[in-house]
Image (cartoon, rainbow, N blue to C red; front, side, top):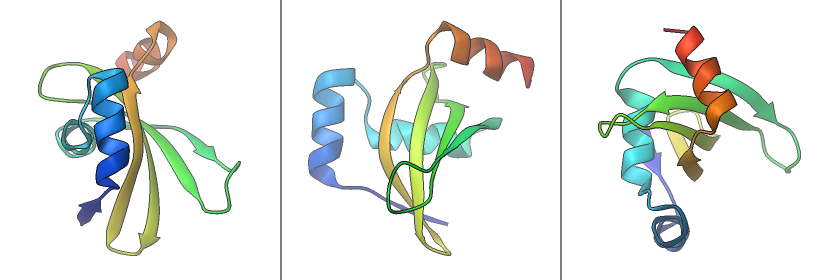
Length: 91
């Protein structure tokens, strides 16, 4: 599986949320990942996942799959209290 993202969106995400998309990638590949929901508001199929990065933050990561072997990270942020509870019940 190959990960990709828009470098400008990543820079904006680091500036506003303090999270790189590399950390988001870690959250999707290093342990338990929970599907929070499918996002159908866009012209492509997107999924919202919960995962934990190496800094032990639970993250909300939005991804799309433009190709069968490619995961495109669209956004990432720290999970809120309710989202953390959902993640923790899946452990």
